[in-house]
Length: 227
Image (cartoon, rainbow, N blue to C red; front, top):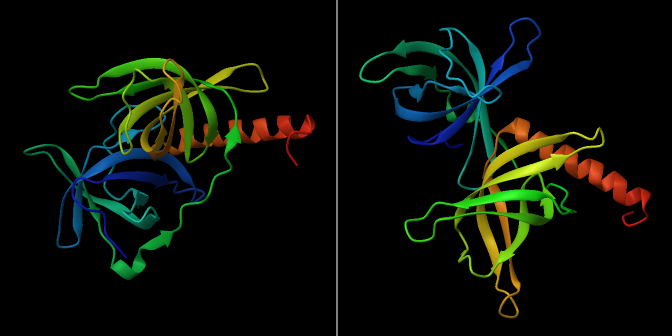
């Protein structure tokens, strides 16, 4: 099994000491790794966006995505802190045989039109526009947009998704999307089609997307559109 590499984004789920549940979720990045110890940037709470200085001894479940697209995780704890030259936390690394590999699940993709904002940061192609989805899943989405936007396969773009629910309220989720397929407009002035997979999304935001897909699936079944 593969250990997380230097520079890799990781997620930390703090394990509650009382009920042994994953109580809080944080995002961080590996800054160094040697002799069974990894140093990480001060983690950011995925619910509040605030940086947290976790206490030494805090137990965590650490997980990350490997280059093969699988999820890898292991249990660890905060074993120390360093202030200089930059503040970091120190984590214990496991033996490779103690790392668990989980295949990424196939998410149900639902045809649905949702408002999204799309942003591409590129020295030449800097776009920020509003459009609508064609379909959505917990693993990615597709959308259409004007053919004046030059979008290519493997582009990495930021998306913000509006997710209305049965209660009449609207939730929002954000993610980084990697374009896996792009279909040019069939005629000048028509829209192109873009499909991508989420490569960075918080688990709370993914849960919102999955929930919206589930509610849409139930709605379509009631209408007799889906079996």
